[in-house]
Image (cartoon, rainbow, N blue to C red; front, side, top):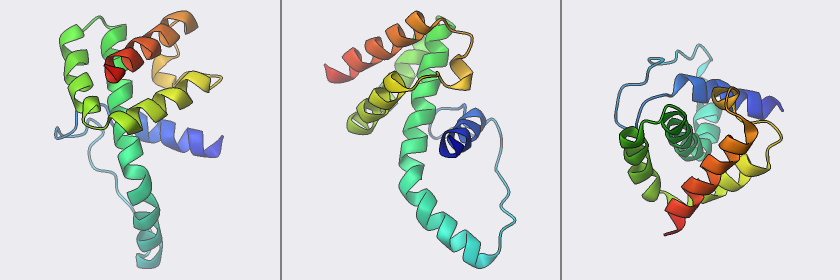
Length: 123
């Protein structure tokens, strides 16, 4: 649960497409050098997943807002990381609660969005 909350906080900060400036700006890190080293090793492994996760959440938000043009932009970014995106969709589909950004979306609609994205990634 702690890992899920940590990822949710990261995702709330990352609302832009890859390559754009992050809506939350740069995050400051006040840890010592040794702490930063271990964090960078740990976050390097999770960085790609969190990037894919932020793009998936961007796609979900765009679909929630019926912004198909923006959803298509996110889809093209996800196609470049298809395997990671599909693995993430599997995890999201089995989570008991949707991400906080999707809390206002009915569960049936949320799962329909996930199935739609999965089918687009598999073609």
